Image 1 (tube, helix red, strand yellow):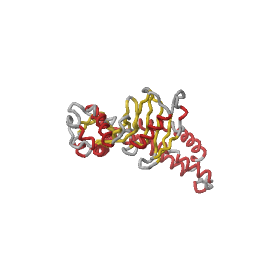
Image 2 (tube, rainbow, N blue to C red):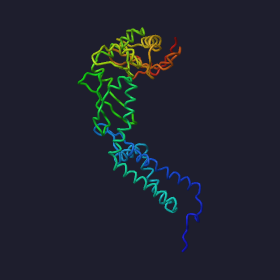
Image 3 (cartoon, rainbow, N blue to C red):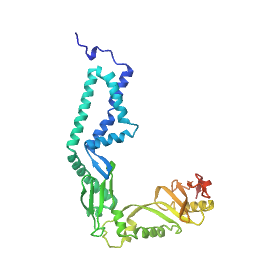
Image 4 (tube, rainbow, N blue to C red):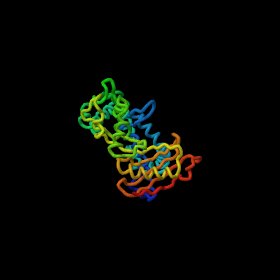
Length: 330
């Protein structure tokens, strides 16, 4: 009997061509999972750690299952379309076997060399750690920071700096998406408990801000330069980058007039004078309990902005202001 080749079979219909393209696209979730076997997956079990090889592949597939059961749906499609169409075309069947074989081989390789991949990740991130420290604390201060591996699996390091007391260390960690995290600033605040309070008072006087607000301040970075633990930290005030995230006010009774007047005062006397977070919020407290929150959005340099009022408790006397917009003008 004469063999029938692929060439002698009728050409594929448009639907069959589309189905074939979808068939090979359906391997993308598995391809990405195998890729994570090499690049690593950041997983939380008892704390977070990096995993490579089969654990990273399985965890990625499980995560993808939360996205509309994607791997399971792809597998079902592959089985059905492969049985009904792919297996009847030698070329497509051969390509499928090559792809599956490649993925299996790559999975085995990433699992066998998981330890070496972890070492590579440590090596690759060393210059990124240095760049992060320079950006956060200045080149001079970064050059004097030393660190050693605290947990190889967690990609965490114990670090030391003359900025802190000799018996105090801080942590550097590589977290998901390759982001570098450290807590040197937090450790510095712990050793200098009055720094944030004194910095706020310095900014209030420097910018001539109203003193009847409690300002919410977030430190972005500090250029420590050659600062040493125990020295006068006020020299760091002008070398500290910060943003104001909002203010808090406390009243015996929060009324619509209070909300309007305070919002207008913040807009005119604070909003345009200081660096701001993306969302600037005024928190109104009534006898130390939060009554409502007002968020201002708009360009600080503009003469107009909009404030939105949010009240969560239906029992609040100002609940009727919930989602009210306050138009601000200078």
